[in-house]
Amino acid sequence: MPSDTMVVDSVKKKHTLMDRIHQVQAFLDKRAKSSVDPNFIEVPEKPWRVIFRNKNHDVDVEYSDIFFDPTYNESTEWKLLFEPPMGSSIGIWVGYRGTGISFSQSLNNNSGRYFSISSTGARYGFNFRLRRFNTSKAQLTGTTYEHNFDNRESTVDTTGLVQSPVWIRSVYVNGYYVFNGRRYSQAAAYNQSVIQRRSAGSFLLGATWYQSSFDYSDVANGFFMMLGHGVHRIKVHQANIGFGYGYNFVPCRGLVINAMAMPTISVYNRVKAYKYDFNYDLSTEDDVDDYGSWNRETKTWENGKTHKSLLFIEDAEIDNVGEYLDYWDMPAETTYSMFNVNVDLRFGIAYNWKNWFIGAQGQFNNFSYKKDENRVRIVDTYLQVSLGVRL
Image 1 (cartoon, rainbow, N blue to C red):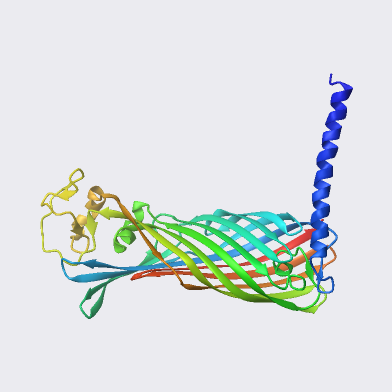
Image 2: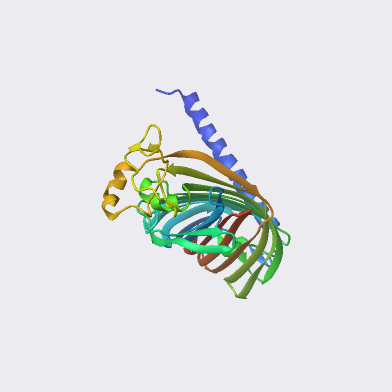
């Protein structure tokens, strides 16, 4: 049996831990109230919040490049447009004052999970969002153009559903500084840690880190890879800084309507494209009738050619393509650029009564990249509704 001394020590340790927790809570409560003007911002007495959210999100990716072939003195322009269906998820957010975590699970169309950490104060805000999902209902539009001096002719233009799921992974980190933090709260409309009592606005200084990967590397999607000269996975990294303005309109007690716009400039841009090479391609130049069989060791056809055009094979040969299809990794291509203009737009509305609140929030982010003829544009948006309670 434990001695009386051990029992007393255990009780003391528990009291010490609880005392520390209460001290931290008291510090956060005091800081939250002393940092704002109570005529404009109300800090609720109950610090804990539980919020249930339904989020609808959409991401579109447009990737284009031009490949030059010195053999024929012509270039091939390729454009890929990826349009998955809008996804829907349901989740929960739990936090104390302005700091909390959330987790969401997809409901339909896009299968995946979403995790975020956020923290807001009178003069700052921070948000970390991790998203990973896949969809087999995405639409891919691939277009190949042949350039010969001043001529531009579309040779392949196809739109279709992917044959194998496409994976999207993204990390979004955003921080901002509020110049008029005593009277204006960005959090009042987005996580309801405080209540805006009177209309006010503020300039904001922000910084964003965004990285995303787009992966359709399953060979079942091989036709679209061939359209893109073997590109099967794209990674985008981008850092932005911006200066904007936000305004909270309070038409009546408990209700706040927020709008925020922040133009940004990218100070770091990197795109890395991973590629396969295939023994088939979409070449429009093919005067060879008999290729024979494919040698997987030498990576050549029996007639010595390295590629066979799918555009010239006979219908009877189509069933044999799967038997001879071969592909292998090529060196990844990494390019950098700077100073692209993007935009961060947000809209939020919240209504508070007693210890309950409801809200709706939307965000639009545009991330663009351009280096010579290589271009990437990602549009990432969401719209969510929420119901929460203070405890």
